[in-house]
Image (cartoon, rainbow, N blue to C red):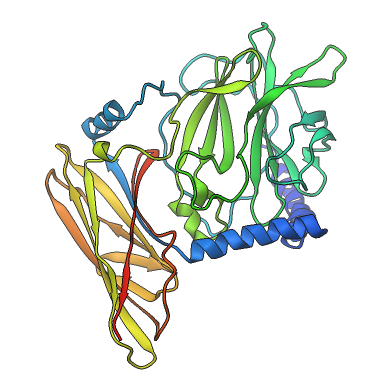
Length: 393
């Protein structure tokens, strides 16, 4: 049964949240908060110095099976492989979630119903890279703790095997432009208080230079399967607060309690995969700029994608050339500095080539330190460094 007043309450809460949280995060108070905001802005500038070439592939069953067979690395695979890059220019505002039974997506149910943590006092772990976010005993009121911390999804599972249900919660904090998250397990005591079992996972913090292939940078969702906790984690690009976030890669990883702490028990252990499992070959020419003319230099770059496998695939090519103006490519749609090209169904041994063109100010030089060529298959990527630019005098 729908509640006719629910939408009005949601809208009112959202407006109040924007005034108290979003505006505060845009201009956080204090020297520490200023540093965090500056760090996020630096991340965007670093992203602005990069040129990305990404290929997203949806293959046939045979192609994906070959991928998994070639690149298991002895690790059990948990969850459902998924790749859903962000598409909006800003991250979605998180919502406070009421307790739910949280049934397993792959069968089985959790022991009982999650407790309502929206007005609980929770012992939060320290955040790896945000001193502005609360840690230790923290009181939540209506799913919020202060201006920048919110309670997200809550699920129930007996994670420590003692026969009673525990609560697994996603905690979100926004110390600057973007949100960070951590997943924490709690147990409700007989007196109604909550004891922290342990931290399931959170990003390690810091600014990778360059980003590490196997390092988690975002934690955005959770679900439970028996005593196991599946957490949706993201690569470095998923932390961007502009349109480049859609170049990031997200995947489900599984964690379990080993008696003293949570450790990964399933799912991918890296965002990168072995190039031998790709069955797609990408060749990128140098971004060649001609001589100055009318205060500009015109550049041309070609990207060739070849299916080297035995199964048909349907890739999408994403090209980002930051600081290159008016980038165009025949057969592609371009928004800002990102072009998207649908390669259609590619038969085995077939290839497609696209030519990208754009301008820079005469005499300008592009910073290509973070330039990459990327193939994405499911929830894994294959990254090749080495995008080059040449400049005629």
